[in-house]
Each structure stands twice: as structure tokens, then as C-alpha cells.
Image (cartoon, rainbow, N blue to C red):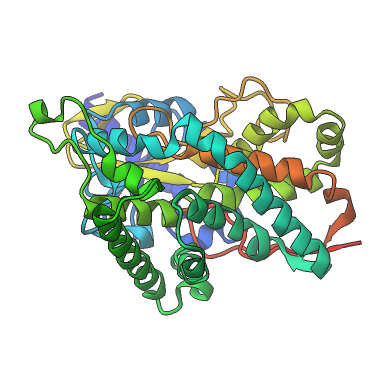
Length: 418
């Protein structure tokens, strides 16, 4: 059989399979991740072809090995002009770090690393625990609360504002804008479809002004640290050896809007998992040494960001399937993290799971999440603070999910203390 004939047969065969569910339609994820569908797709020996909402043809990658391979091959698969699909597929101007390739991506990543250096993260442990304890205490005082709105949404944003040293008098405004940037496309958050972009613009303009001010009046805060960073050898590549104030402002605004997603999704998803598997909650309460593995298991189980896309810059192949130059592939982390070839009993939540090579921060390579250490710290501190409270809690209404296929989030989880 010729390559073209094999390709045609694969597309024809799999088209029947994918007619059941359109993975680019946010409504497909209205009741959570369609794990049964992904399980069937993983059993296929061919890649699955799909179509984005704008009509662009693409390939779905659902197996752990394929997602990891493409993630690590930045020479063949580009993040430019965007890694987004569906409603989030917009032409960013200026492009954020997520949508850049080397050498520009490498330059910005190295220059911003100091914001997440081990010493700086270590200094955040006490503030993170204070934020967690305060949010949990407020929920307890209220008695009845919305875990998604009152804790999951506020925790990462408050930590990021602390990391960036945003003045306290401006934080309520920033939190209000930031809230509208989550769950893009969902009417409650995004209104007529422009509220999210409008709020991102307000955040960007605020942080741009703040960065320009710090360029003229440096202190010892995060903005000054980023503005003062220098990259050795940048000149040989014809690249600037420092970040401009505008680049720092853009990076900070990206951090505020994109850096919340992991914790936001993992807090609600982790609580639901522990309540659904009470034996695992009891196990974690009895042995706090399991907190690191429990944190990783929540990240695998939830998989906060469901997917990203890459564009082939040359003719290539994945799992024997020819991919033409210019075609896009979608890496489904939600499916990879339940791959039976990698995880024993993948549909079982296990707080002691080891090893746990989940891909919730990407599949490795240069684009692995730059803030993964901070996200892990936030989630672990939350679990440590909440684990003894969970037996006292009950869910008072079914979880409400937003209309999105990008994040595995819960927008409302009403609970009360017994």
C-alpha cells in the first residue's frame, strides 16, 4: 500500500471514530474530560485527524509517547504563531513567551528564570502558607462557600501578585481583571466574548506602566530583578542581553493570566478526587510524607491544561503518520496522563503513585512550564492545609463546569462545613 493510500485509509477509518465527539467543541467537555473517548482513540494504531473551529485540519495526539516526543522536538514542531486552538486561537500581538521559538524563546526564558529561582521560591513558602490559611479560615467562618471562587481562583492570583510585588492598594483591581481572563469563552466570565481580552489588556497596560516606572526607579522587587538580568553570549546571537521594560510588562501580564491555571483547576479537582476516593484521603491524613506524591497524583488526575498545539516546520511523521509542513498537531495531555502503557491502573486515584511521569506541565523540552515549581508549591501547601478539613466538608450542589476545552476546571463547587 502506498503512503498516500495508507494516509487516506487512516483518515477515512478514524473519521468514523471521531464523529462521536468533536474535541474542538467546548461543549464536548461540559461534563468533564471525555476519558472513555480518549481511551478508544489510544487503542487506534493511527493518529486521529480532526478539524479546528475555523476549519483548519489538524492531528490529535493522544498517546503519552507521541505527546512527549513532539513536546521535546522543538526543531520540527513550532509554537509560533500560537499554541492555542478553538476559541483561544487568536493572533497575539505582541507574541507572549508561550508562542515563541528559539532563539527568542530561549533568551526570554533565561532572562526571566531568576523570578523562579530556588531561593526566591523558598522565600515564598511562608507567604503562600499564610494565603492558604487565610482563605481556608475565611471559608470556615462563612460556613457555606464556593471552593472554586473563594479559594481555587484567589489562591494562585494572590500568590502571583505577591511574587511580582504588586502594591497592595492595586491588588483588588488586578484580581477583578484576572478573574475575567479565566475560562475564556464561558459566558459567565467572558460575557459577550470580549470581556476576557479587555481585562487582559487592562492587566497588560497596568503592568507595562509599572515596569516602565521600575526601569526609572529600581528597587529590590521582582520587576527590578528582571530588568537587571543579563544574558551572557546574547550578543553573539545578535540578540539583546537584557529585557526591555515592555518585555517585562508583557511577561508579567502573561504570568498573571496564564500562571493561575494549574492551581485553579487542581484545587477543585484535587478536592473532588479526595472526596470521591475517601480511602486515599484517609491514607494521606495518616501519612503526610505522601504529600509530594499526592500533589503529583492530583496534577496527573486533573491535568489542568488539556492540550496545546504545535505546527510542523518541515515534512515529518509521528507514530508512522506523515505530517506535512504547516500542519498542526494537538497534544492531548489529558489523554496522555491516562495512558495504560505508562500508568498502572490509570483510572485509579492513588496518592502514593510512584513513578508518576505525568505531562501536566508539558512533555519536556524547552517549553516545559516555567512556573511549575511555584504551582507545585501552591498545590502542596493547599493540600497540607486542607486535608484535615475535608472530612468536615460536604458538597451542597453538583459541580458546575465552564464551557471550555482548554482547561479541566470547575467554576462553581458549593460546599459547607458540617
